Image (cartoon, rainbow, N blue to C red):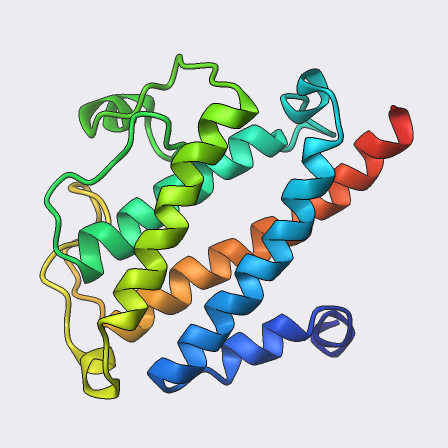
Length: 188
């Protein structure tokens, strides 16, 4: 199964083989390119389709909100050591308690438009780019002092682990988003 997915999605192999800062920078470029195509496809859909959940999965807008949250948690909070970097339009993972979302400032009742979320998302991709630009290979083994969220188990992650986590989130959610976009496109 992994070999099949690796052939279909070579970015899986690229991320698995990322060891240096240059590797991570190249991986981020790959992810931005992948998402660029998906976002353009979403732009061609009506707003209602961008907000629609396919087979119980997150809508495209919710997925982009989750990417905002993932960047805030794994890059801004852990790697960059910001105490409370969470944007209100971020969207935590499904198992994250609503009370915890509210406690860190997420607006779980918000129903933002695609354009509103994409504006925030654009800022977050720039945060990752800037963080990567400021790193050297020795930094990858630095232990981060903050957990991704205040309630996260008290364990320290390296910068490398944080980058792999956020990039895995990006890669996997892209795969699901593209799958769902194909279904939405077929309906419109």
